[in-house]
Image (cartoon, rainbow, N blue to C red; front, side, top):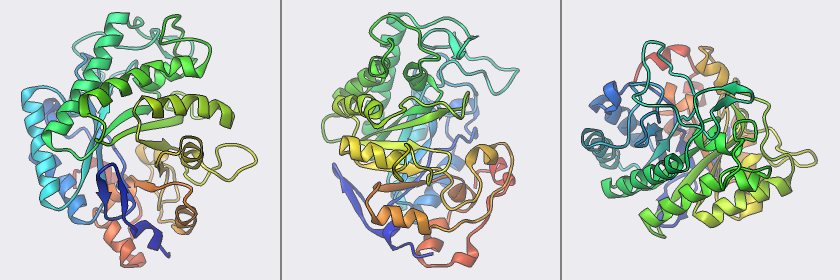
Length: 366
């Protein structure tokens, strides 16, 4: 596997990466009571020590009562919680790494632990967890405003703690994505409407608030997807024009980098072109993009997180697209969860040492 393209430096808005590899955010649930531990810091530190270009943390909750659906997912608010994240970023920096926290609100998604409920009502655009499925009540305008403010406060805290960038989780059927999706957003106010551009106003307002909180030169990433955990076949944009109407306003609102989630990075987004989601996002907005989806493995992450393994796959198609500048960065998930030395092994062409993904990796924080 010729991987030279992965090891070219990348610079944008003061963010200078030694290579094009990003550690994808992966929920781990190893932070008891929502407070990241020293083991969490060591977990990220190992990836930094092994030359990951940019680490994006697991999703971490903003300051809304039901922003998370698991008590052991870390929060990004509160004195103890932020002190713990200071320990994480210090550990990453000590190894020469760079890191962005992923700021998250799960929205109308059931708790992962049936014996636990969040300390407040679930947030959602219209009280729907998926099309036609009632799940609580829709957010009031005051609750929407508070959620926007919560993302901005968390971003400001990320900058204050010394993180190198920040990512907003706007994908996979969680809160921001529930506003994008017509099937879960039936609002008739500023944050709803028949057009995707209208339903994107919630994300745009978050981006504006985040940009105001962190200033013009701090990198802001947003993760997006067409597919939803509620519906793998869902599409927000069916044509390039629809995608442009969705993404360009987000770029204008403050998004610097689009993190474009697919289950399989090699799949074309629209008929008539080989460009994937990240390729189209870059073409339409002119912004840098991150591709993600089954990088280095032969099975997608839905199967992986359902407990199935995956074998090692060639990186040739990935590097071909990267060399053609279809996208700028490559997020690697399960391969890095399995093996913190993945980047070093790829760079040194130690291909025989690359490990398949085993479900047992999910049970540890190595």
